[in-house]
Length: 217
Image (tube, rainbow, N blue to C red):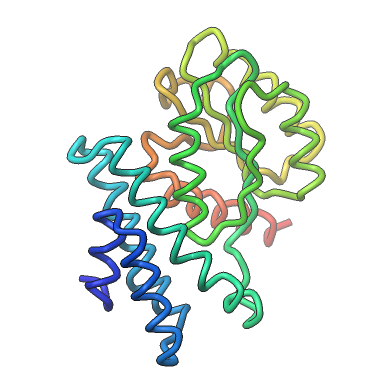
């Protein structure tokens, strides 16, 4: 169980005001914000992500929990920045051109946020070339693309080729209802998130593999 069970449970239940009270009290008492984040806040959202993947909670509960988590993060982020706390990696994420479905993408973005990544959100219905431009501009190590329709999914293959041509040292993550392991292999991506719950875990694996390859060069 999380170190601060009260904070953990407040996030899971989406009790935003209570989260703010707990975090403010802990900060005023000199508690480590890094421990609070790693031992209570992130585990709470991972727990919700796991429940979401098992259909034990649904989108509204995830969004309410995310709002509560965001309230706590707003308080501790300035402290983390001033202490020199660095993100795990940078991610740019978006829903491909022609696809207006962004609930899943927003949940994955939220999980990356709380998982310690810096996230650059391109939004929905993103022109294919914008993924390439944003990756180069931000020097993101992961590009995450989402599609909910097989017709818009086809644009992912074009983006992957464009990105790899510009910079092969980028991990490509796909997501959405039509995405399977076969699609990932066919398109030349590096992996996919079956749900918001496992996006961060998959992202960490991708970054690990990417950095190992870079060391060998």
